[in-house]
Image (tube, rainbow, N blue to C red; front, side):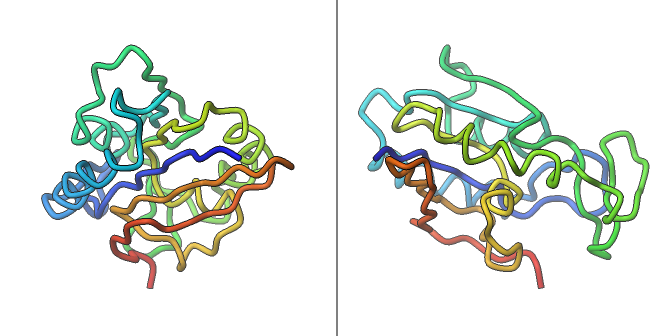
Length: 172
């Protein structure tokens, strides 16, 4: 068995393309930094994987890992698109709004998540958001933002999700 850690971004700016975290969201992630260190080897995460959106990048910066050589960036871990206040509309990074049912990224990537996470080295870190958890089978309303999760990869490739440090639920 191995464990991959996931830090989810905290609350973000509302209804703006490629939103950044609010001061509250940044503080939530900042508070995770010391606690995360207790789970990682002294030299830090084996690998760091971060999405391409502003809020994902703010996680890695706030945790102090943005200049590491073992940092990898991919849209797989999240991008600039975000849900609007209505929860039924997705706001793309360039400003276009589309109905949520027309945004298929989660559905298209879901089959690859368990396999990709299982292939990461033990003690790796993912800096992303709730969609990673949804793609692993959690219900959106059960996911916590500004949180630390342990993704325990079993020998058979299944992933057991453990919430280590709770943040806030942004879906109501």
